[in-house]
Amino acid sequence: METYIAKNTGRIILFLLLAVSLVPSHGRKQWSEKQAWKWYEKTGVIKGFNQPERPYPGMSLEEMLKKAHEAGLNSVRFWISSNADDAVKGINNMKAAAKPYNITLSPVLVVPVNKDYLEDKVKDKEAVRMKMREYVHKVVGTFAKDKQVILWDIRNEPGQFGFDVAANKVCLQDLQLVSDIADWCYEENPIQPITSSIYWRGDILDENKNDLSRRCFEVEQKMDLHNFHDYACGKRGYTDQLVSTMMRAGHRPTICTECLTRVNGSGLGRTLPEFSKYNVGFYVWGLYANDANWEVSWGRSTYHPYEPPFHDLLYPDGQPYDWRDIDMLRSYQYGQSDPGVEYTDRWTPARAWRWMALGPVKGKVFHNVENAISWINDEPNKEYNSLKVFLQYEDYRKNAKDFFVRLDSLLKLAKGKYITVLPTLLTDENAFYPADELAKYEKAVIDRYYMNKVIQAWDLYYHPGETLKDGQLLSRLVRRLFQECRYAFANQPLTATPYVGVKPFKKDFDYVGALVHGRRNGWNMLQYEGGASDSLTYQIWSMSDVLSFSARQPAAESGWLMSLAFRFGRPVFCTEWQPQSEEDANKMLGYFGDSHIFWYQSSKEPMGNIGSFRFQPITTSHVAGN
Image (tube, rainbow, N blue to C red; front, top):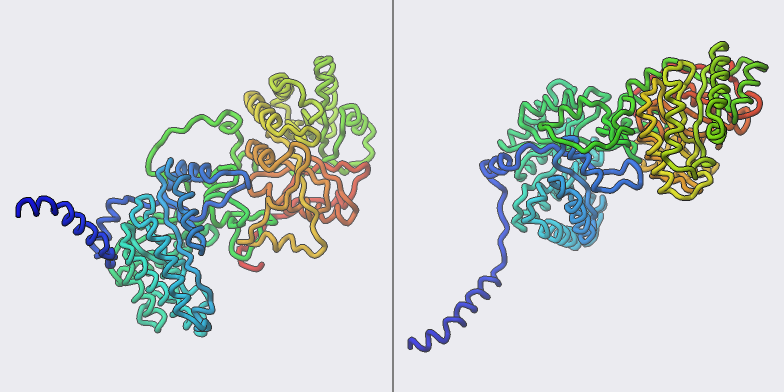
């Protein structure tokens, strides 16, 4: 008998192991309040942002998440695909990019369902439900034990089909779907909490008001933790009412997964104090200003600049809209590598805008000093109050002393006529010289005139890439020029003019409407030749004190380019403007006046109503559709 047992012990153990493995895994129930608070305490304060949209096409996801980390954020909420395999791939990509910065993930499920299902217009409803359940099991099941995924936002703003009574039936069906999705998630036994932003609207905060508000309350009671959206923190008592309603559904931790709309008083200065009263974790909407055009209110267009910003924390170059926002977001100090003097000593936006107090500036373009001097002496008209002059590096190399004598003469004459001067120091013509040599030349010129009040600004490089095709060489040279010229500590702003145009608009193209809030347009309409590119344009604008562009196209296309420059939150110069006609010139002058642009016209004779040109008061009504 002992021999028999010994021989068969291994078989018995193997059989038992196989039997256990064949038992289907069981899901879990909703967490108890105690379990939810234990998770919340272990997780710590959640400070996240929504949707890592690129500020320009070339920025990597890793770079965006690094910037979020530096701003004090530790989590990202993002929408995934309605295709399960693509959703899994998207989460894995986000995981890899976020891991170096200890950023957690809050994926928003997008179950494959349409409004027909919610309106009971689908014939085989069970087949649709099976497809949705498979989606949930695939996505949630893949990451059910993944600690980097911090929570599952199972459906965004259920009932987002309107606020009228007719829409309530659809909203109720959507809430039932949320309840079903929660059950399917629990079947996968996830270590993360299950939640949905059920409380995103102000008409459902009384759970006894109607069937819809009662159903919201009932489904909320199935969630592991509370999740709400609050774009009205500046409205006294609104956040209190939101939290109070959810707490009646269960004493559970609370996360605000969408917030931040500055124009209605709901900036971080009001939002965070409101949340701190209830230990609320949060996700602000947006990180960088981007082609989704979130920096203006719903229904507004970024074709024209608006202030203050609506969503987002950062301008495209990484500068905060308001440094106080970053101070409030950060709870700790950390060290950063030095990005270089070309960035750290860049003028603040406030300083740049103060420089605009000299305006309006109405300028004329000259391609050498001699022609500019002749024009001032002849004084054919009094339309212009500034000159843009291309300096010749070859002349400097041949005889620096004569070069400065002629420039001194120009500046002296200009001062006597109350005219300012914008010197352009380099073009592609000179770029084949060593970068250090060109940088020293520019610094020598700026060193000589760094206090001269006649100098309007310094255009360090006009149209890099117009003839040269080596983009890497141009990028290194542009950075080297800014780097060296920062050490001149000029009292005038530094800029450069990228070589970039806009794809010609079709006759019926609504270029203002194309930039309305949420419509992804902007950089996608830019075009380049030679060595110019998105990256080079972005680099130049990110290092400039004031941003510059040239307008060689009709007013509509030039205005589009101007609107992108304004995303950086700084004054804008048009360093060369070639009007297409009198009508086009007056249209562009209207843009310049509304947007406070300093401009330089290159036509032989003045075009447009230059004499009556002035800056218009900037008044902005933050009402959708106006």
